[in-house]
Image (cartoon, rainbow over all chains, first blue to last red; front, side):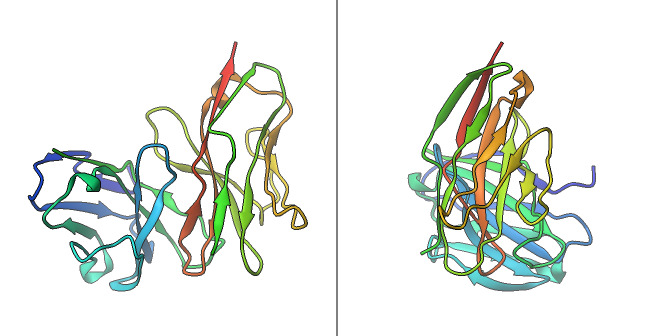
Length: 115
Length: 108
């Protein structure tokens, strides 16, 4: 499968714990995006990378959230001291370029449940 | 602020009936607009983009700058069209700004 992959697919954690998600983009894609989707909403932009550089962060990304993309390949999204409001589907997407018209390819998502 | 609005949460039609899923946008400058679709148990995928002016699976969408709309249309709905449809605009950073989505249910 040469599509975007995400791991784990599901994560259940207790409030206050730290969690980390991984995204593997399509291999030649330079752009990598993270989105969050809550029930009844469309995906909301969190942050993106151009190769290894994190270029933009949404105001939705609190200080408890951090994302990395070492070496411009896979990316990780860490949430520290999780809260119940963090429960959501976390989506990763990649694109070949950064143009507004470029197609973004989405992964299957990681569903986080914070108890 | 850039915003995409899909006024209908659910649209239910019978097989063979025409379908129109509404999308309105608020955007400064020239928007890049997309329709993404998510079939049951599948990932979000691009259906079509306005710049391509193409028809995919019988769906078309026309950008109307006067009405700031990008409605998705299909003349004859099929049961396999049942899915969640999201309208999206390309943001200034290349990110996508999504509407809340419309669930299309095509009944036999």
